[in-house]
Image (cartoon, rainbow, N blue to C red; front, side, top):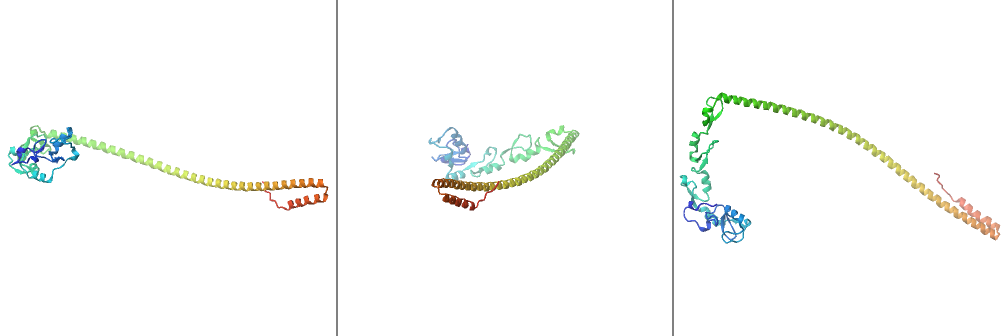
Length: 297
């Protein structure tokens, strides 16, 4: 809602009036169509509508902008009466400074600061009211230290108040003792848990050390096993090579034997004893002279 136009002194330009409430703009916003509104008025309008209330052009909150600077300046220069005029304030000031004045105006109605008092009183008369307010508080004149309200003067009993205070102190003491005992128990439980955790931690460290040693021993054994496996594999390769060499020599001997048998058959058919005795012997001597290495396993 805007400022009541009746509060203003002199003529107010039509362009400075809200298009919705028809009062002088308060915290103004302007649509692209250049119609201006109070912020509260236009936000309330757009909850149920999606157009400008003047020319019905489509608008939404995102297109609203602050008032043009020259219009803002014209608005701030307007003169108006204080809202407390009906209570006697005669101040007339610019719209730009009216809020500051009204926060400090001596004719403003403010509530009494005493708890329980519902009186609304002018700021200039507040001190006088507080001096006689029935809800004002003060200390007991008899010296018990109790703070009483004026309305309770006839009902105040120093002995009863002191007894009540002593009872409160006793309850506070018991509460303090109980709390101290609980804190001690909690601390004892905490120390016990810390001791148990330390013991478990030491046990875990020892167990970890034993496991680490066992792992190292297993690694050493695995290394020896791998070394033995490599040695066995090397021996197997050597043995395989020797068997292949022996097989090769066996095939050569078998070929030599077949050659001798063939020569014998040829010699018998021709009837030449000399040739038959010479050639096989030559081959046998050659075979005997050939070095052979046989590995016995």
